[in-house]
Length: 309
Image 1 (cartoon, one colour):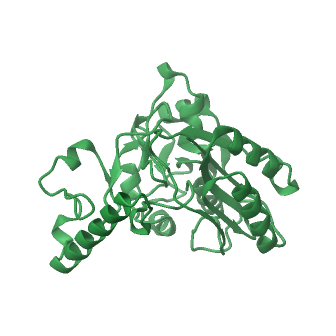
Image 2: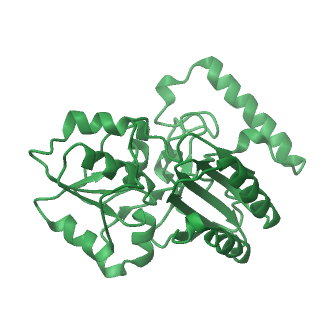
């Protein structure tokens, strides 16, 4: 099973029409996953057989707005379906930022490749910022990068106003999973008066795909928004699972904790677990087990189901 992630900021006149076309093509190719479409562009993560994914990517890349769109591929374990359903949705934004106007189609930070990124990591005059959320940062990051401590990307602008100052930190380098959050974050920083803003082109996924092993500065694994939960430095399915109750990624050590109960609790949420919620999660587990014995899917068994960023 392979996974492809993609995004493109490009003005779309009729997102509903594109939604119908994308759904028909993906369904015909036997793909599962999520694609978000808005007037500002497209953002998606799909899983399926490699040939089918590449045929879909070739079709989508032939559409004029997406002629230069990049597709990033990774793999899943053979027994991991990655996604249970195909969802093509029309939204207000392809990645929620919550502050307008922010238009990455007009201008963004300077895109840099893996080699240039490594140089920026060594530059004492550059502040490196991770634009991802706290639970993502917890399982992997670049050394010395700043964790904004956000629970969602909509909190990033608040982090900027509270902790960054263009007068003191004019040079900012930022990164995210696949690049899309950096598009909006870098556009926002430029609007706020930061002079030099860099963004890791293609995000962590592209970095891991292209950097030489001896030059790899990434530490840990990379959170992804699908049933794999994380990928390792070879872009293969990682070692993390996800807590159904709080959605926090769980390491093997977390799962060995006395506070870990499959589908019910983990060390990150045990103190917030009420008897009522515990009983509801136990009942969900029972329903999932019944569905599995019948060879069927149970909708409650699904994990994260949002595209890459």
